[in-house]
Image 1: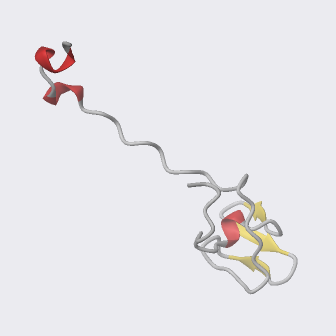
Image 2: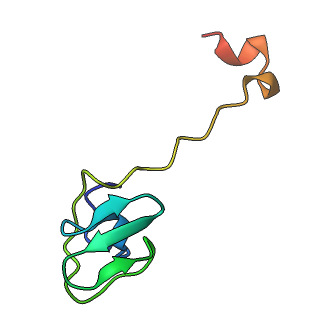
Length: 68
């Protein structure tokens, strides 16, 4: 999840990048797109926002499903 080893590199969650509106300011490459990355990418798990969990649809269950 957040601490995976095979994370796709993106400037949006690089340790060196700083958000600047819709873009990211990088000390190596300047103003870049958040989906871009360079060879200087260093993953920072605290910058990554995980996807929201899926909502459970309880309407498809019956009362009998919750009895022991």
